[in-house]
Amino acid sequence: MIFLFGVSTWSLIALAQTGTTRTCTNWFEPHTYQDAIVAEINPTYNRPATIFGTIKNVPTMRIRFVEGVSGKPLVNMDITITYGWRWLEYPYPEHAWGAWSSTGDRLSCKLDNEGWIATPDHQVKPRGWYDGKYSHWPWKHLPEFTGVDVVATTNRGFPRVGIKIDDLRRFEYSYLEIQVFDGWRAESKWVTKH
Image (cartoon, rainbow, N blue to C red; front, top):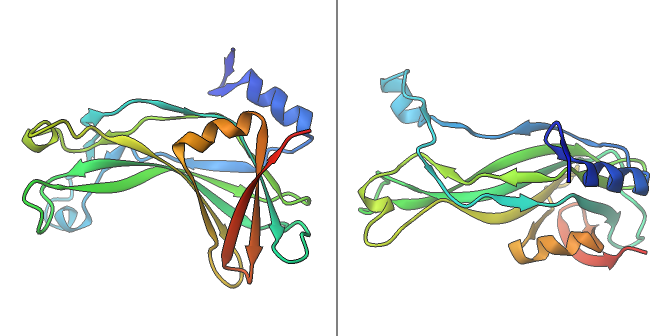
């Protein structure tokens, strides 16, 4: 597989075969950590990641949004895809050994005229900003990938669907259809590609 500007040629071929235009842009990947409270005291407090977990390759995802009752495609809606991971944060209030904090890489998308989005392949690199005693004792607490969240922005709310890690492989032979009811409630189902 050949990679071109961080996107595999397989992804480009898959997008071309489906006729879907590239509707996703504006990546946000947190590379530094800044605690807003501490930043007020010390404005130079902005740290690069210090601990890393196992890299996870997320395939191209084809997702279609439809109105739940009529089945008509939803169009021109903003969609946010979050490739989530968690890391052990220490110190953390009321947790003597630290606590898991969640974050993720985010991708902004807009539905096309048929209700589709197609995301490029993405390598999730779980990382954290604490690599001390409690990230290794009493057992290892490395940053870890937690899954993908898909959130639509409607005039009534923010319907959300989570995609589990084990379900990501289903994008090889299926697409995900998300039905939106009442502008805020969402249900998903896998549809086999023909």
